[in-house]
Each structure stands twice: as C-alpha cells, then as structure tokens.
Length: 300
Image (tube, rainbow, N blue to C red; front, top):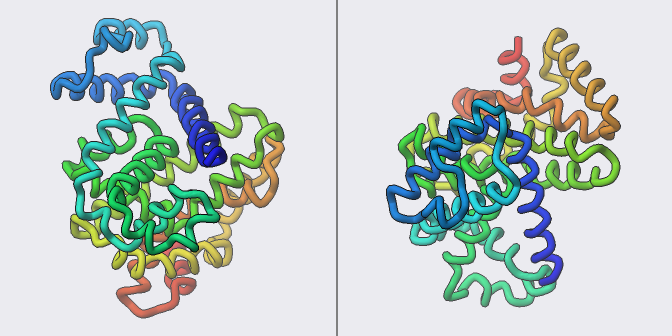
C-alpha cells in the first residue's frame, strides 16, 4: 500500500513539472477550464488563490506561466471534474478495465482475491479513480477537457481512447523506461521525453475518436487493433524509406547526445513513425494483407 501511495505522489509531482514546462502554453486552456468550472459552480478562484482573467492577461504579457502551487490546485480540480463524469458511466464496466481495477490493490492480493476484487461494491468508483489518475497524471491538467471541447464527446469516450492508446502501444513500459533515468539525465530532459509521449497520446486519441463510431466498445477495439499495433512496433524499422530512416537515426543520435540510453532513444524517436500505426493496421484489416507489407507501401 505504501508503494502504491508513493507512486501516486511521484506521478503527481512529475505531472506538475511537465505542466510547469508548458509555461504560457497552458494559460489559454486552463483559463477556459476555470471559467467552465466557475459557470458550473464548482470553483471559486478567489478562495483557491487562482489567477483572475485579468491576471491571466498580465501573465501572458509578462510571459509567465502558472506557479507550482497553482498547478497543484488546478490538478485537483481537474481530477475531481473528470472523476465526476466517469464514475457513473457503464462504459467502465467493460472487461478490459478489470486490469485497472486490480492495479488499485497491492500485487500480492490481486490473484488470491481476484473474484472478490471483481465483485467489489465500489468497483466502478475504483476504476474511475484509476483512469482519472492515469489520464491527468500522465497527460496533464487540461488534456481530457480540451479533447471534450474540441470533439463534443464525453469524458468516458475520451477515457476509452486514452486507455486503448496506453495499452495497445504499451506506454507503461516506455514511461517506466523514462522514469528509470532519474539521476541519469537532467529533469528537464525527462520532462521533454514525457511531453513527446503526450504529443503521441493526443494524436492517437484523436485518431480513435475520429475514425471509429462513438461510443467505442473498448474490448472490440483492442481485439481489432492491439495485435496489429504490436506487429507494427516490432517491424517498423524495416518499413521505413531511406529518407525516413535518415531522419529517424538523426533523432536517435540527438537523443543519445543527451545521455539517453540507445533503447529509450529509439523508442522516443519512433513515436513519429508510430503515429501512422493505426492507419496501417486499419488498411491491413481491410485488405487482409500483412501489417509489414501495408506499412512498407504506406511509407513509400
């Protein structure tokens, strides 16, 4: 339990650092977010010592971002708002979310008490908590809010797209690899790596939200895409054109110069290529051709 609590604390602190790095880039979306919360009676900026619209304008003029305490408060409200929209959704009852439910409990409880965990009376509340924390801690304070505003879709729709992206592309492994660089590379470099991953997540979520009927059935989408994405990841280097390979190798080289291990550098550099994975897998599914073949044609 202690490890779970400390991990959550680490991720929240890490999320604040990444948000701080956005600087002025967060002002507009956070301002809209605060305005909407105030309209719904969920936030009083004066009570929380958050900037007024006038102060936000002054921050832009001074080219200043939010302070860490302000970001911490915004994160709390972001989680509260997202959780409120997720906890009643029947979409969270999908079998795929059992893994998130189990991760709430200590590892040595998960198998012996599997049936009890699955039947937990607070199952949906726990899943909503886990998904909320994952989205906000990993992608930032306004990620889900911005996608909801731009697409007109609900929080559960955004959550499903996020979880599909996270799990199909095995992003937990990449996050762990970046986190293992604590004390190896500068914290600013780590934040840049996490930001690169977040850009990929946003692209992938938008793809699933635009190209698939909503609301999605997460288990069916995973069945349709996960295996193909795994194949794409395994063979993506062999699909590249000569020009693309040069750009990829240059990106890897530049990352290694920052003391990033080669394996991690290749994972980060490949995100731009992986942004095409869903298009390739969709075409492979439609034609019945191997993902490797479709990928080679796609990049040519």
